[in-house]
Amino acid sequence: MSLKEKLQEDLKSSMKNKDTVRKSVVTLIRASIKQYEVDNRVELDDEGIIDIISKQLKQRRDALDEFAKANREDLISETEAEIKVLKEYLPQQLSEEELNEIVKLTISEVGATSMKDMGKIMSVIRPKVKGRADGKLINELVKANLQ
Figure 1 (tube, one colour):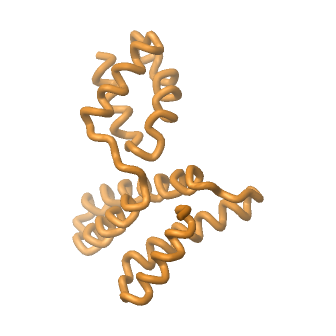
Figure 2 (cartoon, rainbow, N blue to C red):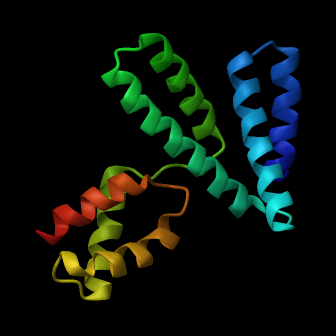
């Protein structure tokens, strides 16, 4: 079953079960997919859908930080529930240790010695961990390993 079909099935089941959080998240994902497909006149495969879900996850995480600064507990709990649903559609996330190993290997592979090589490192790492790691965490690990 493709990811698109799974989203369709989950939308139906969330409507039957009156799961409003899942329904709203799945609806937003499907709307983003449709928008991308119409704008670019393409049919997205699972990889493209994972990219869209990853972007949505990043948006929710950024919003979560802002809600925490504003002490909006109601929005924090709602956003955390949305993040949990989004993560279900992504591949298994890498642990920090696994990601750190990939970062170390990539730094030696690229021959990076300073922060000037950050762009090279990130361009090699991203395809390796696509959809399985947060870009912010990758960035922090690369900085830590280059110092």
